[in-house]
Length: 402
Image (cartoon, rainbow, N blue to C red):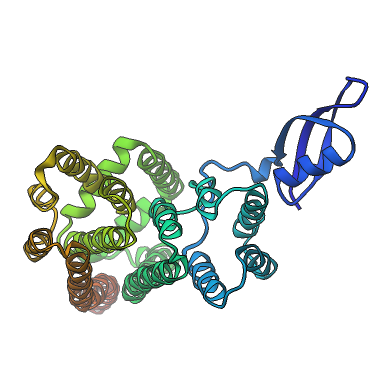
């Protein structure tokens, strides 16, 4: 259970400090009030290992389950507080459990469900809070929560598809590198001792291989340290605003991979924007949330400009098209939707189109990537084998001539 450090005053006016165990800050305050203390301040106390560099978010899978179960309970007529209590008992994720407790406390204090969720805007995705707020106003919270669960499920499936598609080539590449390093660092030195004992002239491939092996043997520790320093430096740089922009710009420019990324980002933007407009969220808030949800700084920078143009009365489809970041069919669907008043439906169609194209291009990419990795690593391993075998035959011929 979380611990809270408090500052309070007792009936005599003296300051009282201490630590109290409570499920939430509000419950800590209530417990202190029950002790006839006037609460001045309550803060969660965290150990050094609990200090968070970035705010923790609810895992997408947990958020999907929460949304779907909440929708089912509300559809069955179960009061919202009772629904939250049941979900809290079953929650295994600490972040989700703690959030649910605080949402219940906010509801008991008179807040609406949307306001209670909005108090945890750093925990929830930005689009989630806006859609829930509009759904609560229109009275179709259960329907919208179901739609949110379906969207999150699709997003998870897309992420898993990318990971599974790249897993096999990555494993092959890693194993091949491990085999080469094993040959160069451990096997090759034994052969070198054998070669040196004959004082024979070695073939060029063997000399190259021995040179590479000696280089790694002499400077391996330094190379590993430099590699770690570069990785840490790049990671730290990628956490900055300019670093994220550079990373995302490079991602979009990569051959084949950049095209897959473009369709993935476009799909997410269209699906979230369509869901928010369908839920009745105003256009400015919808565009802001959908833009932030792309998680790509290049798209965010251009789409914020498009949002400003929309607010100036220039419409939505033309400013989005002028960014040059969306496929032409998507641009046409947005224009048709805006002209016919079916923008939310056209956005859903655009998301479906982007999803199918992303899946096709990802499949084609992995189809080309897998044999490319195997051929490349086969060439590397083959070179090592040829270098060793040619050296042995060369030594045999020289010894035979002697």
